Length: 218
Image (cartoon, rainbow, N blue to C red):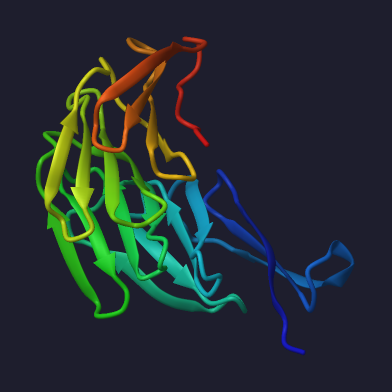
């Protein structure tokens, strides 16, 4: 039986630890490896929905790295004008990756036909991205200088611009049925979570602890 990744941990020191095993339990761990050389904090580690590819992003690495289940580097996704990767999101069918970077354009990478699409609309860097559960809508959240949430179709067509936050939007999450989008804003000027319909109408605003960013939503 071949080994596979059981657990992955991204570290703030620009390193990634992978634990390997032959099953799915702690007792099955047979080895581990520490991968270094990333530039900046590991901001996100996420498996594709089909479990075949692990994606990682370091904040100032300017790239998204793709790994096989046995820990081998498959590919590195980057653009000349990427310096910081703030967030990325897998599409539900595991074929697309959306990247939120310091570039004003939202990038969608098609892993099947190896094409990239850049969507223009945000006026400053992009802090967050999230696909709807059915993969038909992509939401992106801008920084303080932008303050908007934008909804896009899978083909890259703009659907709606959501205004209401007065600071950057580091957190986005869809409800499991895709009917509600939650957005979390930075604490300095806003500190709220807003709930929107799938078409962009504001439902309600929730106040949170303004000593922290509302950046982690589920």
